[in-house]
Length: 292
Image (tube, rainbow, N blue to C red):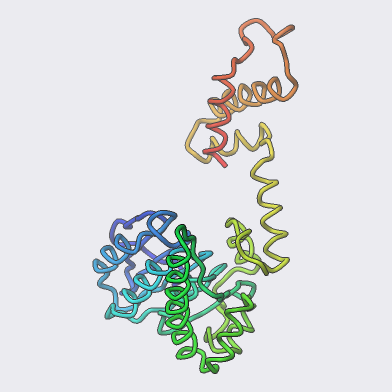
């Protein structure tokens, strides 16, 4: 999979990418929550998957989970595809994303990635009878997930049920030891897995590992940090701007943000550089956000 060469335009869906490769293999990136209302639509994914003619599919996975039915549909689409499917857990295979991971004929996991299983849960509104019906439905869904985990891992039903009830997070080695993954992904870059998983909001989970919560906090701080003039200029140059234009735009953006943060009323602003109004500052903020 190193030095993957595209021979056809990549197909891009909402939250995933499909890349056909020259060596009779294809790479699929699934890096978002699962479910059409929040991220990856199973209908779109299954439709695009049918266009893949490669003999081997490398599915790169980093997802916090999402809609159980979309996840099961995606997993079944992968299982039913004639290609050999190799799943690479690049960061996180949590909740229903773990079921997608197990659709692989081979499952490789980055040495600092995570695999998590838990009892299914849902939002429900209604009377007592409707709530009881939802509880029964969740029991049936949970039973189906248990069967999948048991079949793959070889663990007992009681053990899997305990893991799910306790919301169990497996390290890479633990996932291998318990039969959910086959081996460490030696092609993964050390340090990238946790950083990749840290992009997600995992507050809904009760036992998120400290390594992830720390990374999430750091990522949030970095996202909210005001970029420097040098950072803005570099991003503009990377986007194709000339050095002259990049410097000019970066200087204006830097001044606008400085005036905003300092509450500058415009007094003493040099001629030819008027005080930016709220709309101008908002525009600069939007440009910088796109460049991050």
